[in-house]
Image 1 (cartoon, rainbow, N blue to C red):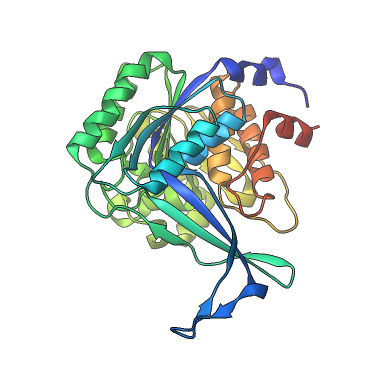
Image 2: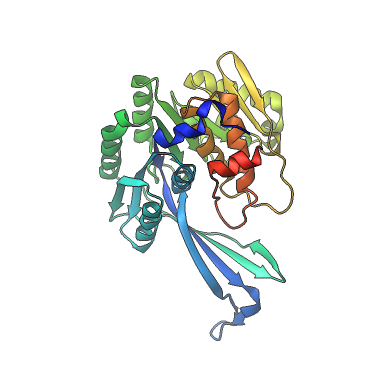
Length: 345
């Protein structure tokens, strides 16, 4: 595969900001052969032989953009004034990501996803994840600090990615107030690519391009309250393509911007004014790890679109990057342009 019209070559000249919930991904590698009983409780004491940490959630997208060779990547959000926050910032620094917009908040903890993986009989398996996050509303002072930095760089960026990770209402950085500001900003800057991804509130964004999987979008349109976690949606409606067409068209008309619906093995469908585009998935076999696949699609899709490619080609590159990601076990993914070119050869 050749670099169509020098799209990938343009990556180095792009400036992309990621506003969202930055988390620490913490991987614990456990060797079952070393398990021992706890003397105090008799329960199994798992023995961790390696610990790795990476920027997660919005940080995963920032990491992906840096690995794809985007010239300037701006991280905008917050971390807690704690050790995990220091690790997250250190991870961003190693990737060369600009974190002038990362606020250190002394009244918040750094959200963390702890992901134990156990090796037993030569096979690696993921165990139950442990989440640490904030359960109280984000302060107006923190909203002000984050928005002030975003306003400062708005005229210097080519695209803005919004990552709304937290399921608890107004407990992350993408609060009701921040969404209102984003809607107004999109209205005032129609040429700026603004792309939003949200775990359970994709239907609440206005005036921006949105991406969601079939369940998130079905829940946004058909679910009660339009902001419930994905588990509450109608699976039948999500898997009925006629219903999905209706749901995506509903969001498109509401936003006045394209809607991207990811359909797993069925690929991606883009809904924009006057047409919908279906882009097939890349077949994958063997053991897979879907963690990070959606974020990898977002990173490659937005980069390619911002570099001047059309929707269909951007989706194709997003699908290719995601297919590489899911074959990388125990990580949120590391994909470069060279990997994509090799895959598409």
